[in-house]
Amino acid sequence: MLNTKFKLSTLYLLPALLAVSLADASEYQPNWPSVKQHQTPQWFLDAKFGVYFHWGPYTVPAHKTEWYSIWMYREGHPIRKHHEETYGDLSEFGYKDFIPQFTGEHFDAKEWAQLIAASGAEFAGPVSEHADGFAMWDSEVTRWNAKDMGPQKDIVGEMSVALREQGLKFIATFHHQWKYAWYPTWDKNTDASDPQYADLYGPYVPKGTFVMANQKTEPLPDKQFNDEWLAKVQEVVDKYQPDLVYFDNKMDIIAEQYRLKFLADYYNQAAERRQDVVVTYKFEDLQPGSAVLDLERARMSDIKPFPWLTDDSIDWDSWSHTNTPNYKSTDRLIDFLVDVVSKNGRVLLNITPTADGRILQPVRQRLLNMGEWLKVNGEAIYGTRPWHRFGEGPTQVTEGHLSEKQNPDSTAKDIRFTTKEGALYAFVLGWPTENISIKSLARYKVKKIQSIKLLGSAEKINWHQADDALIIEPPADAPTDYAHAFKITFKTN
Image 1: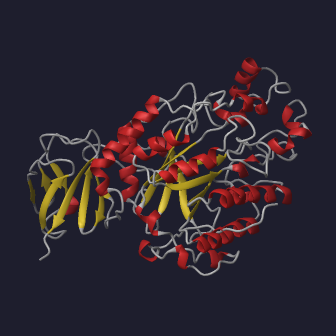
Image 2: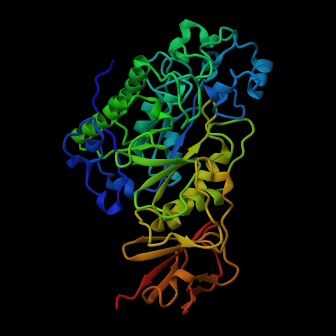
Image 3: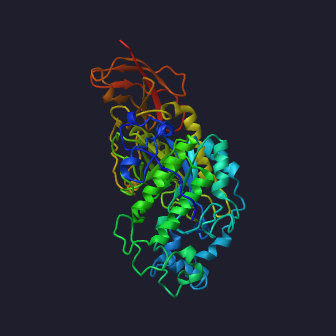
């Protein structure tokens, strides 16, 4: 076992209360009242956009989903049928056999970091370990790691250096609690039951133990599984000192004392280093106030009084590269970012490298498009805070886990607000072809407006503040191809 020292982060309180530096915190104890004293650092309150990537042996088959490693063993599943037809019987070719083919020969940490920085992201990092049990760092805890197998490179370590050289905060994401009962270790007809691979496939569990998140798991993981879960996180924290540690859902199957130990140790270790850190969680896996709430493929329908995160993928259907990608448009990605920021949220966008270590051109182009847009409109994104209302317009947001496909594209009649340094920014989520009417800025609802400018444009903006709305005439030319930010200043008397 590795020694245990670190502490985790983030808060579920009013933003005004969250600006205290972690470095000033007293010692944390492994109990909920103590870890709830940790406050969300200023950098995370100001940051709005991050990038991470699902990259592992599951990208070798590149078929349908990053969950290939579970469905290939599931009787009657179409992915199992595909696997057996393509690779053969599961007793002869199991998930472990994809690892030598996960070569990553084109992986270049510096080049990837430069691309991510060019997207305008402020924090970034890899999926450190997915549900498949393959660690993406140089590990002493498990032999199944990217330094000793597959690419034979310390992906987490190389990215931590490269991203920090670009001025980004470094994040590490963990999904490995899902490994419990992920593979059919009970099934003697597959390699998952072979004891020599138990350190990859996990401990023996009875058939039917695997359930989805927020469902009751029986039996729960034993001490050995809990110890290994914690040791892996601790190893990454000790070696790479991430600024943000992200946990996928289903962490509630990990015994409470292990979750608390991680939080207290991570927060304490960071305080010793005078490092401001963040931890994120999903559902109710940690108690509110002990870390930052994270959503998955989802967003809030209104402003929240606490900072929150949402992680979403650049691909509508998968978190990893597949041979049938279905990429979101840049317009959709930017409108999503603006909507989330207007409600006190931040976006962690997942990208999809190939097994040989390439980031394909459609993904690159979307990242670069976002970066060019943020060069023009970043003033209205970075370091902003919500206004007293997030916006107005016809498009309504449906909340809920994995709900993003239910949300339609925004229109030119949808307005979103952010504020910074006394200015109000009104984003129009589409190029207007008729007068822009903003009811929230009617003459008797706000102070008198002094000036309005369109970010990225020197054009004079024609407007008037009527009794029922602020009316802005459509500018002649669009400075960007996506959401358009009007900077509004108010008279001081």
